[in-house]
Image: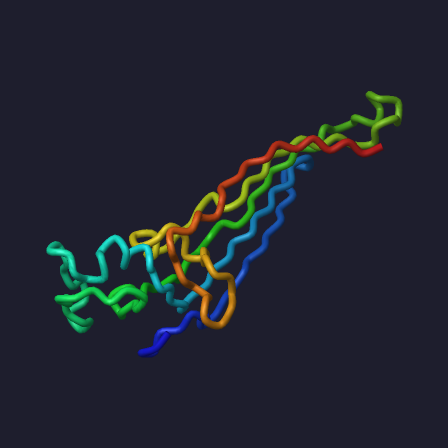
Length: 166
């Protein structure tokens, strides 16, 4: 990408936290942020027919103006969007059943019951223009990184857990 806009983020940061509380509960979460990368939204360009539709308006005045003719295969600055985001990547909560070893005559040393989830929260202005700031149809190749062409967003998943320790 050009004009000072790059597919590579300025920085990325993850925060991992694990808390043990009330003696029998474990809580963990992973937050991740990526700041400063730009995505080329071919999805948005296709929806706008390359800037030739009658409803085109410039949200930012210093970008190029509407064109009389479309230019397939060329994404202008109008279709480059800041893909910065903050995401709750994983969160989990477990409960350990106390004194289970005594109740099972030492056959089971511990039982944990829990729930976890992935990708529950994504905070990003990019969601106004695309499905997912991380999604790229063409992988992380130098020419294909951060190209959004109607990709599926990251799945939100919720899991139940039963852990038996013998």
